[in-house]
Image (cartoon, rainbow, N blue to C red; front, side, top):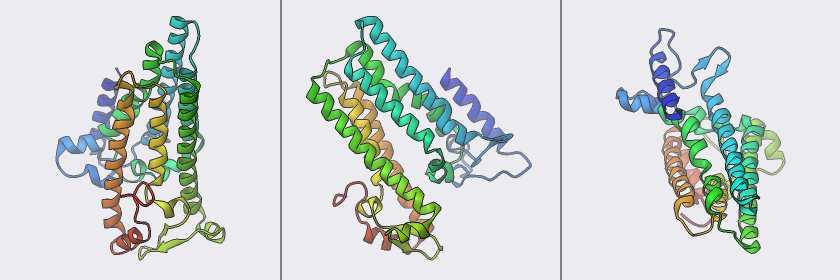
Length: 283
């Protein structure tokens, strides 16, 4: 059903993008190749009255569905085992925490590639409405019937990894958000930056002086911690962190290409100042 809704929504959005009022189109979705444009999305920010459909779908239905499926998996485990295991509780808490973070810091998505660059087509519609709730809940669904009953030390290690990932993820994103909203205040607090010919500033201190996509590193560490809570009896729970790694690397490379076009000669200068992509001193 979610796949059908995603396809129907994508078809409606694609058709609406040809309306006479000349909507703002997204560059990736205006190649002239119909199938590709349908997938990427032609219109940048389609609206239904006051509602920005892309912003709404980016957070609301998929994240709520993810949390609901996790809760259902917990209830299933209780029905089967008589109680929820520590691993199941941690997966629910950590992932609900992640959902809360996305909603609480909602304004931060306004500067992400999904919102600023990509159109709203099948790629995002399917991702938001089908892929996120049914793939991101994989760990909880696995634990419902195949809990490995991890020892306390393993649970603690996974929890510490999640916290470390969150500190990196939230710290980096909040630092970037503060700098973009009020760069003068950030500079007064000690932030450094590279000025560009476009008039914008590229942050080169704090988390962003360590690596250009350090927030992706924190995000991935959290995904790994959730998978580790499922033990090592099956590779199935690790599909998520494997897929997520591929997604983040691909997105980082896309962003690097877009920034090279956007900033021109200033981009190599920035990469010289911050040479690492994900991990300081690596790649």
